[in-house]
Length: 395
Image (cartoon, rainbow, N blue to C red; front, side):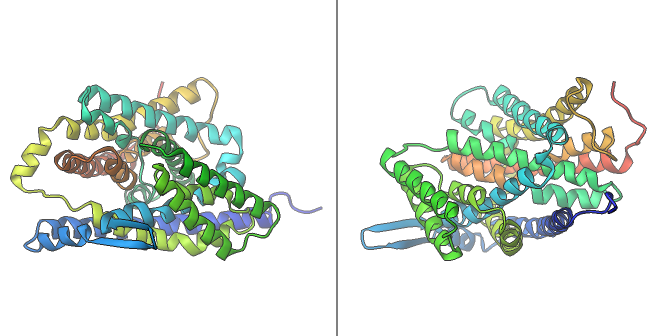
């Protein structure tokens, strides 16, 4: 009789893919941090005009009358980031089909924690900024940066069981799903029904092609570009094309596609995004203005306090009410530490900032708040994960 404790081939493949994902995301977090530092130094150096000129340079792509003209920063944010969201879509699908999210009770805790970690930060942000144009940024503190958070966890949570990393990863993936919904519903404007119908038709074509197994990789690429163009013209943010394609990819090539694209996403696309968006002025005058800005305070409070309270309190409530259990090896100090790590919004927070605000000063204030929140969240997680006591129990 075969040994039932021996992992199956599918389980082994999933475990291998998960280990590879953790390794890439952790290393990618280091590269992302380096790109952020370069952006900050460059934007505050004697060559700061070159930084501004580079990202404001316009590039036009198209055929005949159908052309798209965007500056370099928007090509990164609207174009390259579609590949980032494609990888997110692939990982979401893999988690629901093969990973932690396929088991309802196992998935319950990170899902509930993620929801609490999105709702509470948004409410605290609105409580601070109250109303006006700044209120459009309520989605900014909802995000958690997987790469940065896993990178920090690898450093400050050294020795923590692998179940802690898996809990953080699952929570962050659910967080990404929430961010995708927010972007699609609240940060798309002036929707053109005709182009949106075209996008829906392209999605239907992808589904049909997959159903009859006639969708080759070149065909997916062509349909993906067409979907991006249709969404761009419709007013819905075009990066959602990546999510849709990621969710529609057949199960068989998910691991192969993730293996091919994940490195590019973590080591090229996301660092380039940081290089394009993290360069803010940090002079004494600019910092004084940012510190006194209500929107900056709202972002910091939302990310640092809101994430911690939302993740920790909702996790406690879920366990207390009996709808979820702590994963094996996870202690309450780990949950508190992950709650603090959730305050590292960075990539998706910066992304939503670009969608929420057109005002240059307000955008810079928000970016400053995101960077401050990342530093504070890192310090708080280090305190909780490195010096915490496993005997700590919540009532």
